[in-house]
Length: 199
Length: 199
DNA sequence: TGTACATCAGTGAACGCGCGTTCACTGATGTAC
DNA sequence: TGTACATCAGTGAACGCGCGTTCACTGATGTAC
Image (cartoon, each protein chain N blue to C red):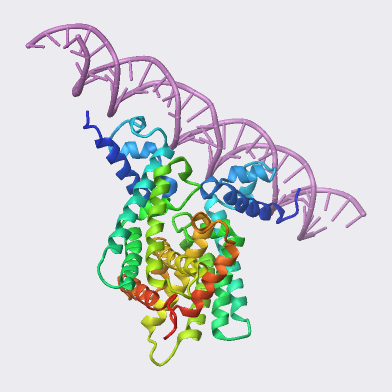
């Protein structure tokens, strides 16, 4: 028999690999068990249901994203630099964890209200962004409406960029000779230098 | 028997309704036939396969999006106003056609390379954005790299905002008392007034 | 140190289900002569 | 105007498939005494 948590971790890893290779729709407990070289009933000893497995993946995803954002937040330098690093961290998370990113924002896939810890991890990530925007833009003439709009704009921008990169839309449209990495950097640079700043 | 194209249109409409209600994974030819009150084989007289049905939905979606963007492009006023209207048109399209929007950017769901017209419709929409960015930002000191970054930034922003709105993420995070409509407007206003503009 | 027992992580068979797709058929409509 | 025929959009039965989930069982491990 395996050590206690071995199969559990293997199932989680195989699930992400499967989603990465064949998309969210291809995720099935049976295929995951097959990849782990284990009977298709074995995963049920670690996850009560397929939904519970997905919820665990979502929760871990948000936790990892939060850690990466908080790491950017702790960096020395100007507030603008911290915000810029957080934006890059968001995109980096998506590129490094495409399968997790794909399932994290699909409420119809996994009911997060049934999994409080995953919901809390999502809030934790969001609150980093709120703090960074606050630090960068709060001022006597900047009301809550404007702060909320700036937050929404930043989140939309990094989320959209991540999504388009993962779906391959940008790769198809941007000039093929250009390096994707450079495009990401130029785009985030431009955004953080201009968007929302008073002129 | 029905008139020639009646069931065809009904199948397309039911498919979108089904996706809207239960998500992309719930789309099945059999359920769609059921909703149309027709045998489950009947749709095959109009679509060779499920993939062909999805490709048709994607193609029509991009065509409609292109029309809305081009309508914004034809508006009188400043270039900035046209770009701002196009951004709003993109978000409006997503909110008005959530099911279509959800499947339009999922290459693993429908292989667009197998459906040239859908791919062309996608390029048509993208080229509107390219023209509007060009009109707004081209200048002696603005090279192609910068124009490409501005384009990417704009697309990412409206795409991310649309995605977050459809997935309900923004509704959960933003202060509940605020009107979503107002948040969209403030965000797009702020973005178009600041992002990418020389200071 | 030995023994009885509970627990835990596996196996393998079986369930019912909905799916995409194929096939043979039907009956109404349109068309050539 | 009638007739023969092709076409077209349906029906209904059937196929094989993979899925999530349940059940009864097994054998190794940990633990109380």
